[in-house]
Image (cartoon, rainbow, N blue to C red; front, top):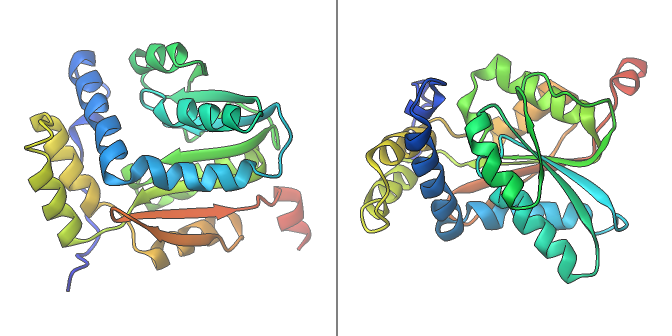
Length: 236
């Protein structure tokens, strides 16, 4: 009853022709939403666990990075425990990558459906609130690409679909002074989100691996798994 059917729809920011100023304003809203509504914490918990056993100098790729807040915070977390983390921020919107670069990440403009990296070349590959933007077939392609590139772990953080979550986002968007674009896209994003079983099944179809899926505060979901190479999958 509290979980509506998954919507398709189209968010305003999915249109590549959106005014860069409008996009940047909305992405700033998303950073604040992540900070206050659980998105940042959900992603960072999984990234910290993934990096815990890796030596200093590990690499992190954030796919669909927006303004680069997640790799920036991940690098700060690593520094606190005496480790150096090399972060790569990837997004299809070139206008957003200057902010990610200013936060200390290498910036790459590329498509999540065709990551420009070699197999097993990045220690940890993550995405946050990216997957729900794709239809099922393309979402699986994104997951396969992340799995292909990752050497140690893949982390996906996204929205848990619920009428209650959508209503809550709509209400808090006013005191947080989100733009009308953010209010529209954020509400639709919730309805394009996943249930735990849906996210688990999506990862399994794409990669052949059963991920560890957690419900997180703020109606967030995370999935994490150790990547399996294409050769290993074929051999199995």
